[in-house]
Image (cartoon, rainbow, N blue to C red; front, side, top):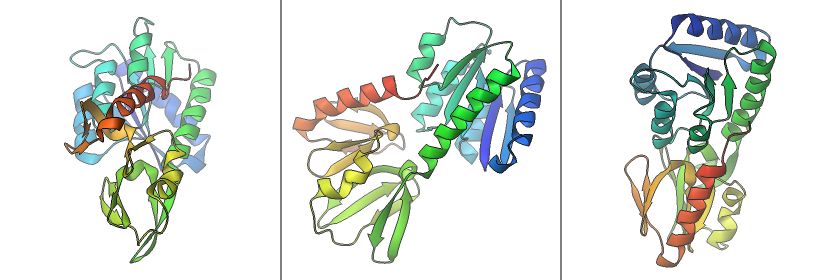
Length: 246
């Protein structure tokens, strides 16, 4: 199922864009899409924190209380990797959208053709990200773990420990190096090797202070002294470069 959040404080714009989204989903039934409407950023964030996130966020920028940029910053701080599409009458916030890895920035009024094109591209990217996974051999059998679920991986004794958003998974005894075992993760630019025994997912890192990486769930990971500086640089580059195709 494709879950889409549409947020705009002006009712007429909310209704118009919802009609376009419904038309889009009707023309692509294989997506099994569902749209939820929000008239404020507060309502959207409350829903996100209590019931989980969306695959796509379509946000107005100029809204009272919390702007579309403010909403996106909070989503990213929560570790939300959903694609963000901005709708606005002004291009004054284009540079700010880079900071939150917006997928696209559309000026109102939006044509159906352009909107559908952007949605197709965003859906394709979201689908690829959501479906990437690694196969892990555990004592209970082989498990397929989505990369999107993995906050970080650590070598513990002679096994790989996967710290996921929904629990911890330990591999069977490994017989090769940690670097070799973690290679499938490192092939994805979300992950970074930190020393000899850690690999972190950038999308869950919300800050780096010295040798400490702060994760969005409140956990901290101590980085090797020699790796801390390069990790912070790579983490910053990830946030600058990820997303934004317009």
